[in-house]
Image (cartoon, rainbow, N blue to C red; front, side, top):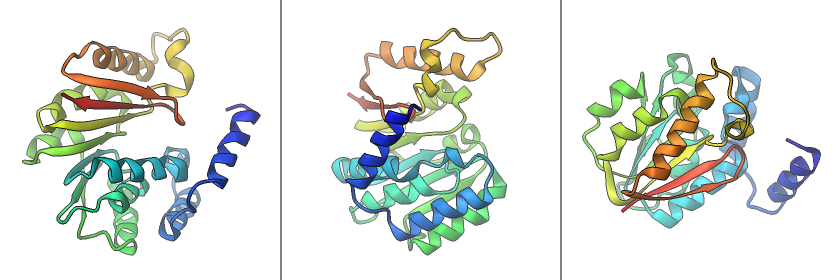
Length: 214
């Protein structure tokens, strides 16, 4: 990230709603206690997810890749329908206690259900139709996630796929051993060619594709 983009992001942060107090604490504790804290969604993306939930007004939300729970709580803050619920899947069982602690602190335990394990194994067991699906798990499995969740997405529902620009590597020469970039390139092309959906890529942070099922 260049200095000007850092300055612009700070300007944006200075001109949006303040960070929720629980999310602010979660952000701080993630940076203190977790490896790779940059995986955290953060305030800007959290606000975007919250606003999208306000606009979409989903009943059922699925998140693939909880990390420490920032994005799940952000989305929960934007879900206002009675009975709205979020299923969030995290593969790292070492994060479970941390995540659940902050779900409870946010008072969202009635809304957010945490599932620990592989999304590939868990998704088939979820007997629900979803209005919104946020994909932020293992980038090497994005196409597999997409195929697994597509029939579970309601017509008119949305998939948000995070990190699709992958720090700009999608427009650089790809190394033969770079399976992450290779998979994201293949995923982006798959979405481009899928006429069952409408799609747009937003150049926010590391890129988010908004996919709408027709």
